[in-house]
Image: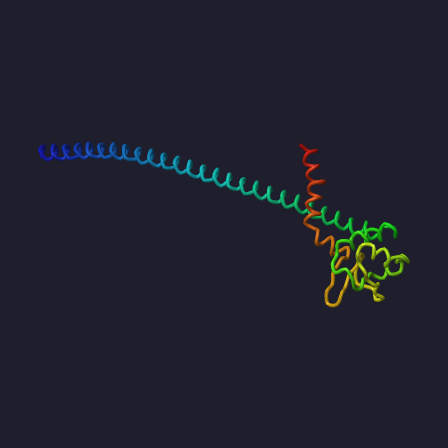
Length: 199
């Protein structure tokens, strides 16, 4: 019976010793798992933070790029509007010239056209204020043409017709033909000077 008690005591002690070792190993393993989990959590947090910073930087770049594009488009639109207003103002200025200056401009325009004969067509306003010596003055420019009786559908200037050939020298047509040169002049004289003044 004593041997049984000793055996039982030995088994119990051995079990306690084994349990203690298992507990110690479990504690070590638990700490390793916790440390590993903490390390992974820190790495994940750093990755998440870096990803968030990259995303924020990307969004800032996109916003900055969009703002620059909007700003550039706004400036270009404003310049386009200013150019259009200036060109419209030029047309209105020419069309509102007093008779003598207006027809002096017509004679200057006539010097550069071909054909040099035919029928010259004017709008109704110009037909009503036509100088009495218009055809003679026109002849001095090298154009031998008669004035058409039917008003032309133009804002100002003239159309020279000889048979099937027409030379459109209306104010709108001449300005449209020279639009690129006019825009270059406006850019150079208005916008470039403004930029120099801003610098």
